[in-house]
Image (cartoon, rainbow, N blue to C red; front, side, top):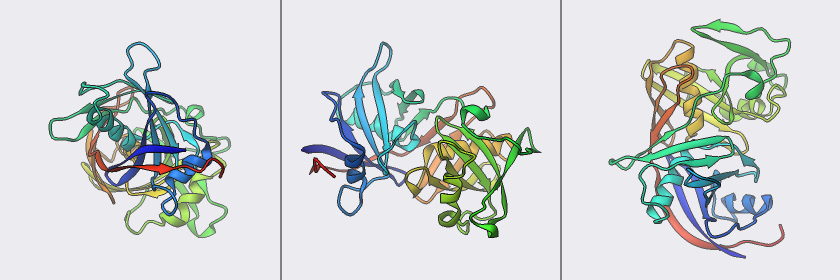
Length: 291
């Protein structure tokens, strides 16, 4: 089967975008993995599918598959690329669209400067909804919130980490580090992602606070490994920093792939994320029927 695709990137987080507005392609998990493969396929952190509106008042449905072929709830950088794609392809003339994701409704807005702002919804703090198993653990208060102990039995050298846990439509664990560049992301990222306290696995954020308005961040993404940027990870890190009393309500997040602006005014309020979204190239690819 031959399909058309568009390669896009947002702050270095890269995607293969598929137009399924005229009909579903019906791809298997193995075919999504093939598309994401950087040696045999196109290469991407995630595969984004553009699908028709699922109901009144909604413009499109947005479906995300990680590089491992699994479907996930949300992808922040991908949502900006999604908005840029449907606008540039003439699928809508609106500068503000309403998009249904697996985790809820988001509302991307194309700005005059070319960047895209996405209303990412309100963060979720209820442990059962993240989900995070805190049975037998003692939280440590900090600021107006708390961190939780996370023991990594597979790496005794790491000792016990203290992480902030929340959901931005997908689960995040945020660990404060003195130097993001020196953080052991490759070593500890997989251990945090697969920690049994997170029954659906977790995205692991390594957050360095530079000033109250500037941070550096690296994220080991669930099902993708470390990426150049993670939009929901940036949102989660800033929300965690604000609740822990370390950050102001508007923060510039420096990632390896570029800069994101995150704004949040407190519990119950929605998180706004602003950043770039660009098309890299377009093409066709033959997908093997059996993998």
